Image 1 (cartoon, rainbow, N blue to C red):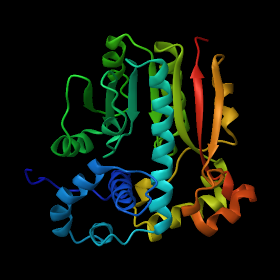
Image 2 (spheres, rainbow, N blue to C red; image 1 turned 45 degrees about the vertical axis):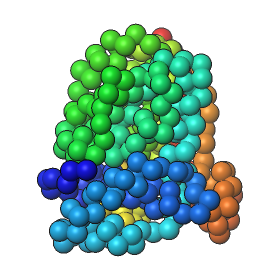
Image 3 (cartoon, one colour; image 1 turned 30 degrees about the vertical axis):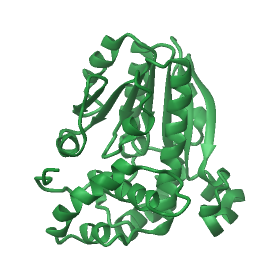
Length: 289
């Protein structure tokens, strides 16, 4: 394979894509892995020479595979949940459309391709330029390099004329609330009957004391810049239902409830609401208002 070219940006949320990719690759190679992701393994193998040339702390952290073990379990567990939701959707709508919002370097298309799905990866141009060096598009798999807030990407999704599911894994918390609301309402307007599966952060971990603790962890332990701080939080998954008639909460999933043995001792926090509810995934149906 050709050498990956260009600069890797560790200044903001783009860094989360690299951290997420490496966490999946590490876990994929472990015994009894939570998530087998051969494409992730291939991508980190190709990215390593580029990381080796960079001097930043996070580049060194990834190259040496010195990632917090909790992340190498948490991130694959989360990805597996989103995969399972997409697979469930495709059992009913095998030719349906999946839109992976803020996709980063995720290889979800290759993990769930049923031979019929129409799949869109959506992220900022810099990220998509890098991703196109690592993965190949085809007639059913398209990468779109633009901000999610430029709603023109929806034109390509509408053109397929199939039921749609939107996945927003690790995205919404980095956007202002007003932008998240505009996005969800536009998806509801243009794709009535679609599903949205998204990760949400409890407002407690965005504002005030605990918000500062969260930002400190991102900066110090995970080695991410200030631009990666959380901006949007909710008091509960039901909050999105108040944004418009027709937004219906179907399911909530908390990481602590998974009870996977690889979570280890951290499972003792499952009954401590502050920790259990810090981040979770919710599935909604977006009906016509």
